Length: 476
Image (tube, rainbow, N blue to C red; front, side):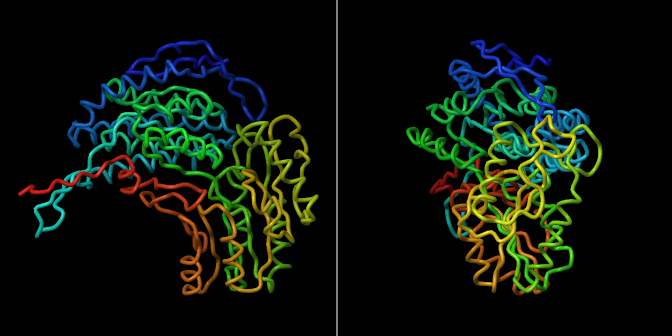
């Protein structure tokens, strides 16, 4: 069993103040393979004090010095590519090839893009050539960064790198059920030579360290990615000190497939939701199909789902792995059973485990048809490989169904009619829209409307989340 009990605070690996062991489970076999410590209020206070002290100097560091350190970090990250890939595969069940090509690569892309953004970002600028006002962007201060288990390195780099670039100091709390990639990232930070206290890592759960960070009076900002339920609690905890809160929360994406969509649209939609075992917040979990092609779409969707293999995360190949934990597995199975009970038609998958995979948190790629938008499977975020297919008559009805949700993260549209695609995209109430399978480029803003959160991550938008804006009048 790996011993990963120590925290990284003020440039050193130190023991926690109190003993509170927590075992990390490999979701492919349900075996404990590592032990971490869950931090305490004393650990948080300790890290915050060092971060406050480090902020006095790090906030004033020249941009070129920060760029050099981040470029060194990127080089080390690349050298540890296989370590990062293997770690995420073990801790959260991403198949090893997918872990490399999607998970590890996303972190590399974010670091690279933020370096480019930092090089071009102007922290001081004239307001207007006719004005004597001057605008300065300054780091907000000490940040609490809370990251999820489904895209561990992706979210760590989307928060840590812009915070460093902005001149902030920070305490990172990775998910306690997938913490080892965060520990590995702290090792990369250490090797790159960032000053003590600038970056700190404490493991812990939401009720403990998460609450201590969000309620701490000396933390100036919380950036959280996770469930909407937890995001609401963090907002309440943060309210007393009126700190900035940036939230990237759940989603219930809709994917409108018109009759004039390209031939692979349905199959692509199925593969999209099943990737990462359905554990992506902007996954298109509701497929809306125009009635004229509904029967054909059902046949294609079932066929595609049945082609998707489920297997161990350690195996190479183009398959999906387990979901993260027993708690998540039980929730998914409960929702699948609710779909059956509420009258949706099951055409692929189901609540039984895949044959030969009785141990581990494996879920079959599951598809329901004849779903109405008031069913649980259409309203609740399942966060598993489960797709609901809903028929529609016309464009307005389809858009209305997609927007009939408390979420608003990512929505999708498939049609060969460019004008229709753009028209529908503008009608969606979501932070992102994906037309005909196109994906977001590094540096574009990511975030949601309504109960999918606030703020944006990525590019200049992500950098500006960690900056305060100061107006100085009478500069000239």
